[in-house]
Image 1 (cartoon, rainbow, N blue to C red):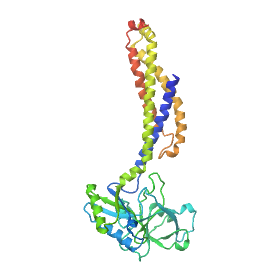
Image 2 (image 1 turned 60 degrees about the vertical axis):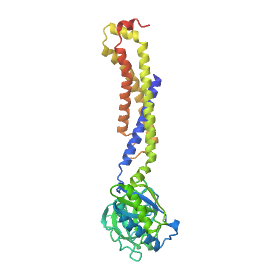
Image 3 (image 1 turned 120 degrees about the vertical axis):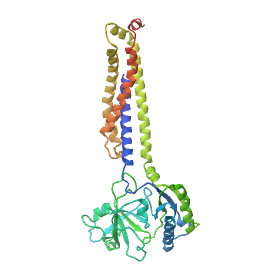
Length: 387
């Protein structure tokens, strides 16, 4: 009996853990990424490999690639960028014109360098102002598009359009860049990150190696992959281009560790449940066999089949109840140990606890019912002659 109680308690701990990780995975998968991850192909470019420097020649290369790729059938938008979701980031401080420098951690901004069609290709909605256009050249005033969080943090209660800031903490650069647009917040490093400040700059004004090429398409993606490669080859046949995956696959890969943890915890939880049910079934069957004569006497004295069934089931449920009572505090304690791995719920999540307990109770009832039902159908005369 002590073994059965221990098995039930351990099963409850593992099932609650599996429920917590499963709900965490669901919460992460349902996070609003801020961009439309469907129907986007990701490619990798390598201009340094064929001798391109960070100069006007590189800018011209990116512009031609975007134009040729965007003109392909089935392509709705295309753009190069310094990075995309879960591919690293460039973080730094900014100085805001007319603002007294705040604490250092208040000025960390995630920066990205992108093309004119980046927001259309990624499906990031424009909220205020404009995105980058052909007027944003090397010789025109420096511009940037910022996200909602940066707009709220540095320009609360006012329009950020036309406000200026600079890269770095030195106030003398706070007049370098003009804000021309605000886009919706997006996820940059991971799906579970808190809203962060972000700014985008056109590669025509900040020339860096943009190794990512995003292509939003419609229809069948397979011919588009070949078309994109051909279009890039028309610009520079020697330029290496590699198809990576879709943006949706990239998002899915970012939660691969959480998915693996969920699968493993579910496997061990169900395994423990299976072993506990075998134990309950075996113990109940053993008890029924030992008490066959007693059951026969009870039935000979007038006990009905239903009363015998309830008697045997009650004894099984007592063990399960004790196991649940022992396992619940242990599960809550274990939940606190993995609380940092949870997202959108706490270690004492009622739905996970109730679901695990209900699942365990249901299977325990089934495991105990089968031998109890067999006991209730014993012929009293056969039972009295047993042994």
